[in-house]
Length: 358
Ligand code: F6P
Image (tube, rainbow, N blue to C red; front, side, top):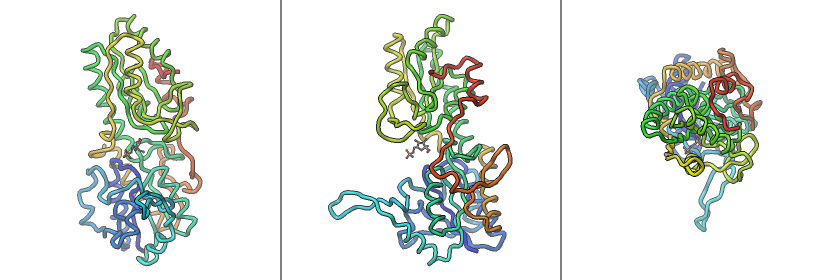
């Protein structure tokens, strides 16, 4: 058996642990393992694979990023290419991918990725590729999966950062807006915001109104709390606001970028208070994985190889109700996991007085 491993989309802490576990579990069965360099894009080059052996995965559990490299622009169904006139377009090169796998006698693919990668995997499955998926994204928005690798580390980093920013907010009696990642879902903002005792948490699932945040700031002032910590997911939406361009959140178009600045400016204007904004950005994705992420990634990686051994393809290994299980990759195509407004976590936020902007 020859297994190829791909890491697609944005990196996340724990990717290397998953690669290591899958590699060791495959080697233990006497199989051959290769890694795809820099995402599917490299399959169209002369040298797409890295041979993976015990030596190449030694000591990588604690390393951030992915030893294989990754690429956002690696969708084989929409591969970017430069036209003769210098402009860029995309083309479907998925048949070439199938051919490369045949030529290199790859029997199965472990696709480690987020919802975008699983959508690509669904289409490749229909082209006859044997795929097992491993859920990865710090955003934690993969459908059918309680937790994806990378999320735990990201909320840990975000919580620590918000804690630190809170002490300076309090000293300067400022409004502080911290923007965290979460394009379509508010998992990072909600979890880190609650854990770090934020006063306001804004997530894409609950469109916010400035009036409601202003009221919270005024209520705090009246109680002698001269600072306010606002945590906002990058994909948060203003209620009745202008909805434009990149990305979608709960069926709506969102404008990514600049939300923290916009909030800080508007709230300063309304309250007369000094404000600052901080965008945590890729800090949330880099560096060593948490203990939880190391473990879940190792478990996912090894479980993926057990799937391959049983020839149980078209499966995503997932954690549901604290149990490792498998769901068909094609069953989650085009779906995404939003924060449920009925969840106890949202209720907890409300119960402890966090303003959710509605
Ligand atoms: O999907 C994960 C994610 O971290 C999003 O939260 C964020 O919008 C995006 O990746 C940023 O990706 P890039 O590395 O392309 O800037």
